Image (cartoon, rainbow, N blue to C red; front, side, top):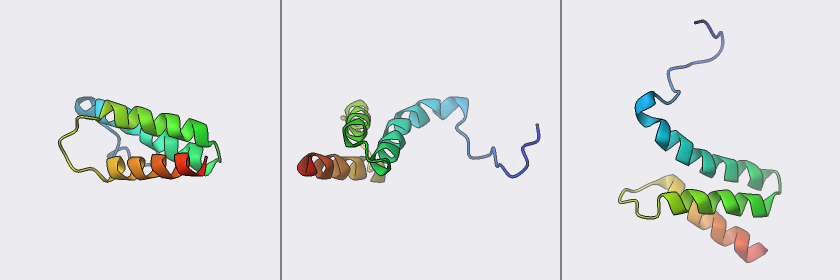
Length: 76
């Protein structure tokens, strides 16, 4: 397969597809937030946080999602 200008090396493999599917909620929240769709952003961030609510690892995305939800809910 040839995809000029695209690196397929960084795509998730079958072994880690589930991580990418969970992180998709985080990134969709970011996209919604940038588009001004606050309610949709909060919904996606909360889904991301709910899936990994018992996570026992340090994650910048988890910390960021918590902060973004708090900010979005505070600003209404």
